[in-house]
Image (cartoon, rainbow, N blue to C red; front, side):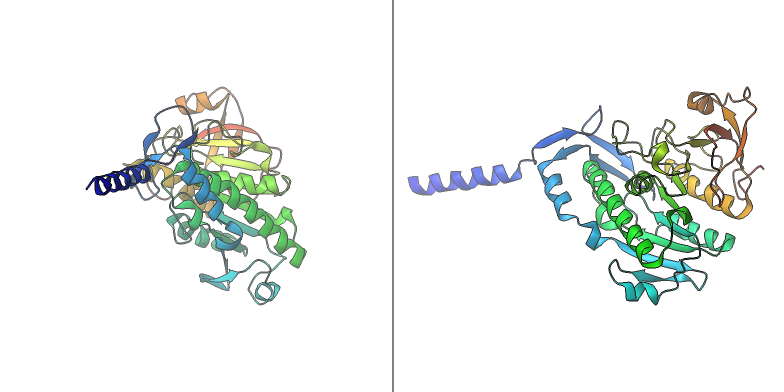
Length: 337
């Protein structure tokens, strides 16, 4: 009987140990460990903002070189993608990819995939505006966790892998980085910068659409002005889903950057960044007036400086810099000119 009780205690102790949470190794940012975060579909999740041993193990298992999927869209296949495989030159050669076109690279955000609204809005907009190659990066294998620290680690790893993929395409086709435009939303916004950084800052045009806030404030891997030859960020939900401060050579704060006309949720505000950008590809519009800094932009006090600049659009605006404010309509067409 004593042996039975001793064995039962050992089993109970072992079960208790197994139930303990994984040890925390690092804090994400200042603040509570568990915080509520909203994904782009408007779903609320309780996320862990601390790095744990389990996260380290999970990050080691994520291999973007193998799990990232690359979908090619062109005017010849605008709705059904052609998969591209790194290292498979035959698949690339038989696809609709053409090296004499510009190439657009699209990067979805947290808990999204290749079929997210970000892609379904931007693919037809780009193809309507110009005959381009569009490469949609599906890195959902690294973007689906509820651990923010893990998703951040995966964002960085995926960015390196996408940079390698672009380099491989260019080696195979003699395409140049000056032909590329990289566009990312949320976590993908920071990943767009990471890709450019890993390509030596030579990508012609990098756009961050409301890059994520939580976990990136003190992170040196966040979007940076020098990640491309021209970098631009559009802020539509700062302080909630999106980053507050300026990140790029040019930062736009439509409607002050947080509450978009016609929206009744933060998810809607966050998504407005790619809806505005899509409209800018087709129609231009969205003239911003220059602000002294982003504080002035969020307060709507930008009537001192004379500078004006178009937000978004097909072409990089080399040599431009600063923070800009503009107002939009509540429904399409969003641009007021």
